Length: 172
Image (cartoon, rainbow, N blue to C red; front, side, top):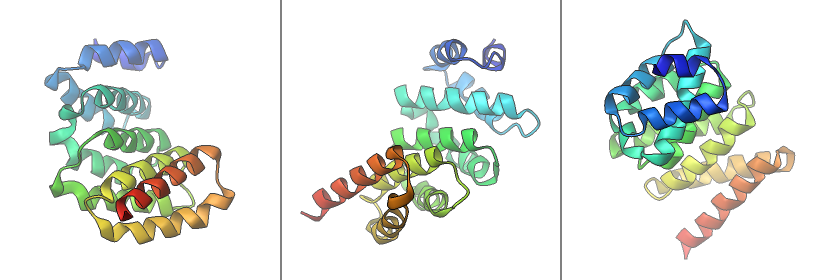
């Protein structure tokens, strides 16, 4: 039933799939398998969207899946899949084991001229959260934000300003 909902590729189906998966570890694991499906990019994309919606409501389901999601985000060429993986990370308390891996991939996304703006914007938010755990990344993030802000979209600028505001609070 989950796969059929995902293949409909519309908002009501994603909402229904999110409600179906909400607290079900087994169905969430199924979503993760679909996200890694390189043969069916549409299914992978809809699964990633659903996964990010589920994590927004219940981030505890994400815990055992960081390794797989980082691998998919690192290897995917599909902006929607990367966007939704990074979006999910912004709702989660990243375990110490994966803190540097998540920071690294978000910094690479932020620095890349080829990444879609939504991937970059979500990366800024994740890096904002991680800056509490990894103070060493602040300078690199600030450099990238200052470099890109004059040429960026309002969504990116809002995220960048939120990062700077949070940074000022940390420094007080």
